[in-house]
Image (tube, rainbow, N blue to C red; front, side, top):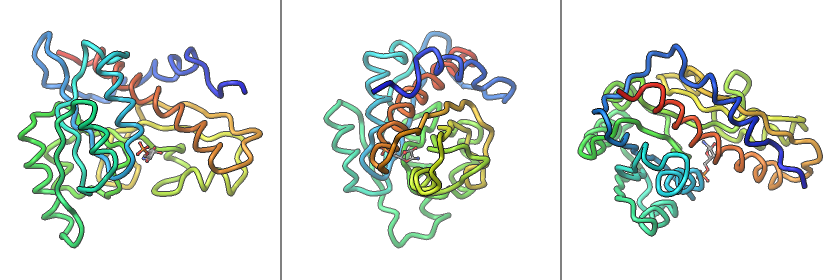
Length: 223
Ligand code: GRF
């Protein structure tokens, strides 16, 4: 089967990443950008980013400061630990959103992240979390955020028989998937006749686009 997107297409899609957004990384010359990766589930995007920092496009540019979850039993945490990443968890269940977010932000600050990278982090973030990291939180979404926000984006594409979806990497603001778009990459969904196939094609693009977008951001904005 043809790969739905080529490396060159991904490169083109990330060319405009971050331009004009005023992102500033508080890095020192020559040091790696520190990533805090947040997840709530299996963590396939997390794993792809970890591998990129270890042997891929983010090698020499970024390192994983911590992988954090609001679910202590998230499978992604074990996978991160198995790949040598520091891990941390704080259960969110039953906690008031603002209180939890303030505590999570304090915990993360101990790891001194430059960027907070959401990778299947199933929480709507309150200002208590966003403000301490304003302009430095990224998310990946399986659809064009102008067309579909929130959960179940692959189901939405599948149910509506879309011929393509657009993976989107964006900065996180206080709305639901409303932040400035850093990069988008279309995924050809023609002939994808199961939800699993839609997800398989989409995730393959997610995994490359997230690392490429981070690379672009770091190259453009590293001090
Ligand atoms: C991905 O589809 C991502 O776009 C969305 O949540 C899913 C997380 O999957 N925000 P994984 O845990 O990275 O495998």
